[in-house]
Length: 74
View 1 (tube, rainbow, N blue to C red):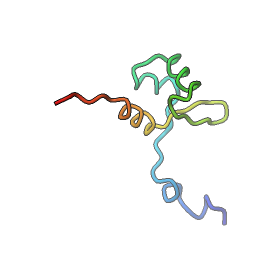
View 2 (view 1 turned 135 degrees about the vertical axis):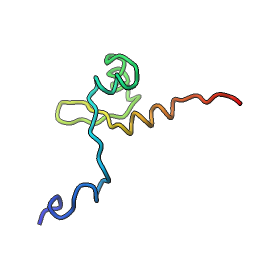
View 3 (view 1 turned 120 degrees about the vertical axis):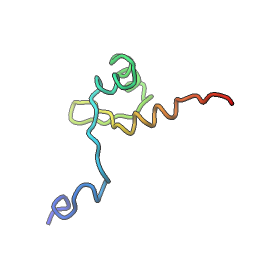
């Protein structure tokens, strides 16, 4: 029996959220698609290659926002 038949995907990776295309990810970040593509090319943000498509994990967006958030003093 193959691994994918023996174990449901959630048991190996946990729940998988749908990947975001560059247009949707840029919209969520409030930046242009060109800016996001520049960040991807400059390795400023993680991405997933699916064939020729570049996709972003929703968790990557969350982590990016959290790591670039500047907390108010006080």
